[in-house]
Amino acid sequence: MDIFKPRMWSIWEIASAKWGSILFGAIVGMYFADYLKGYVWLLVLGCVILSVKPILKMVKE
Image (cartoon, rainbow, N blue to C red; front, side, top):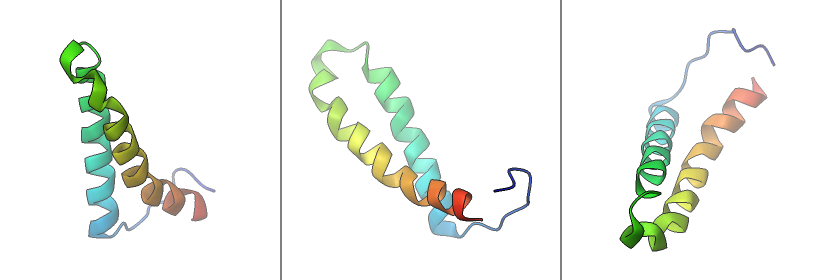
């Protein structure tokens, strides 16, 4: 696995990495809001699911 090798990502991999990052930011932002803490696990699950494909693509190449 060469970290600095240029890669071509498909639009779906870019979109899932983007949404995974957005959900991670939402999790961090919601940590301080008491009334939204019940939904944190739902966002964690979405963040993990959306981040798996880009990570696997990065590791395989």
